[in-house]
Length: 261
Image (cartoon, rainbow, N blue to C red; front, side):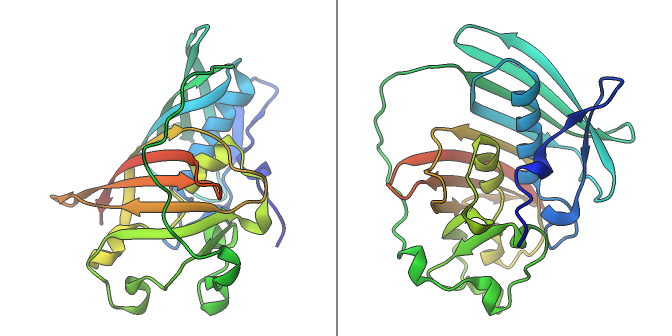
């Protein structure tokens, strides 16, 4: 399959100075809308490409509405404070004048400090020993054709038997083992089916997503991923995520608020 990452997340500057991004269907979810992780990755790349910042440490995005494939989005990048240690940038995404998402992200340059890991990566079999779900009937178009997944067992919801435990552990990587950069880390925290599906709720849309960035995985490696939901109230639920490299080091953490439709 043709590798469209990172090209599909690159905004270009028009002659009038406007940053534009074609909205492709290559990252659509089964709901027929572009994946929220792809939106975050595109906005994060715009901030990194068009301001003088370091590497991301945190990004918080609020989604107002989904863009439509085939349209062109405009992005507005606004530096908030470009400090010596932390640089903060706002990015707004709109289509045809309609605001669709707003992201505030902070970055750091050459920062070094203590590291202590108190958590542990999910225990998963070697991804090379696990089946490709695309060969077992999972759709291979849209998002599922751009991200590879390996699971120790098929989720209950996919077999019409939700387990009641909204926890998912799996391996992920960009299709074909393409290098995972910082925007792709933002994509992968929202690239797999939500664990709330194990409660029998089959339509969930992200309202807000926050990502803490720790490190990049080695090129071509798989990312061990754990996602959990513990609270469902009035049709809203949280989802906590962790990404770990294949050496057992934390890549990123995420928390999102989503609504059931």
